[in-house]
Image (cartoon, rainbow, N blue to C red; front, side, top):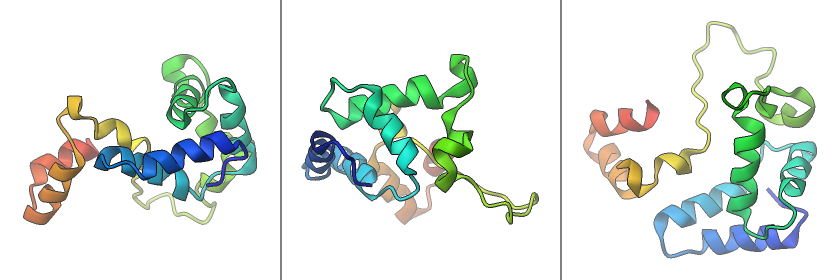
Length: 136
C-alpha cells in the first residue's frame, strides 16, 4: 500500500528495514497490503493526523474504528464503502471455510509468548500446539 502521507510511508519503510524480525514483518505488512480501498486508506491517514508513526496511526484507527461491537460501534471492516476491496465476493459459497487473519503482529509480541522465530520452528517441526496458539 502506498500512503498519501510521505511520513507514514517513511515510517513503514523504516519498520520494514529494522533489524528486529518482528518490527520488519510489521513494516512489510504495511507496505504490501493490497486490499485497501482509497477510502479506507484516506480514513486511516486522517485519523491521527498529528502522528508520523505509522503504527500509532494504524493502531489508533484499529481500536476506534475496526474493533466494532467490542467498542460500541459497527466495524468499518464490514462497511462496503470503506473496505470493499477486502470483503468477500458474492460468489463465495456459504459452506466454504475461510480463515481471515488480521493484526497478526499483536500475536507476535514477546509478552504473548509467541514470536516469529518460534512460529517458524513450529512450522518446521510440526508443533501443532504452538501453531494452534496463533490461530486460536
